[in-house]
Image (cartoon, rainbow, N blue to C red; front, side):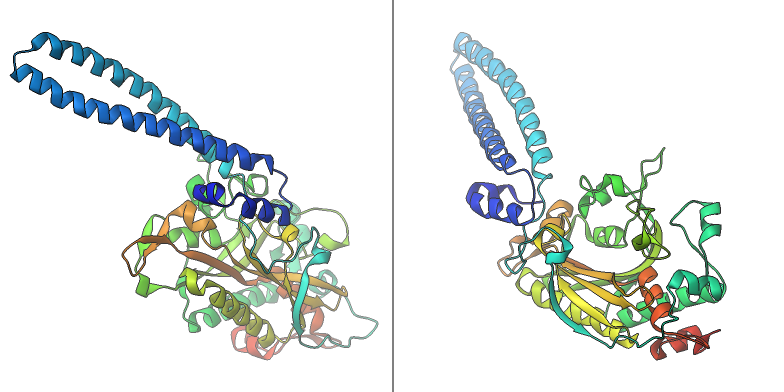
Length: 423
């Protein structure tokens, strides 16, 4: 959530930022400023009444001590009237604050200065690329054909048990999924991330803290009675671990990692782009999260990008890194890098990770703070990244490592899988 004082102090910065993010709500900036001015005016009036009441209380005591009972009673009547007026003003302050908050939370985070202008994924900037695209024969197959051939994933069974977008991993397919999770977690833990195993459902306050609410309600599954949300990513519960916490400055950065299933309603059901594992409603992902000092959060962001890049390199997959344009960024992000791997069986790029800095947007909602050298409480910066999302990584391995003899297993993954080929 953007700080209220930013609207007062730098209206142009907000207008330019939301324009870069293609947010259609410039008129709301003036509404926030007007609501804030009204709230502050009411608060000043309320404070003045309180000061008057305090002074009157002293005068009443003095008048009574002097035997001026009638004057004291008149002053008591005036104090009672002011108390009633103060109650009315307090209600108006609460109403103004509620409307102000409801308006401010509609605003996305402001993009970092390095974010390019643009509205569509085609306008994202390629930062760098790596790896070599495999030279496959004309008989190359997409992963949904290969998983059927080798009995790795049963998409029809998932449709029977739940519905479209809920694949069932079978035999060596389930083993490959488990091997990838263990490989990713071990890699993250060795890099200093502390592992968490959080709940798969969260309450409204938790979803609000990371910016899923009120922006992404339609993309999340929700339980009927409790109103819990199935998590779209481990970022949601893991970042909230430190909600309403003051972190010691010398403990920053805080590094956390977690494996969870993820649930998203966003998946479509038509066309080649959503076939197989390209877009599903339930998938596994390993996440990395950091809480950082504002002075070095962008250095940490670059280190997180290198961390994910090395992981993809170890899997031997051709990849590219994109800096997202304003119109393709998430609601809460200030700067995002996307990783895409080349899918040889489909001859297309598949997104497998997003690494983002949210600056204080999430920590302002969650009140995650630290104390600076002067003892003043400040908001931390929050960052996260997929390390990695499994469905498209699995699709990339299956397609890029296909051979007439079977599907080869990347060397780095073999100790976790237990063999070098699926046949």
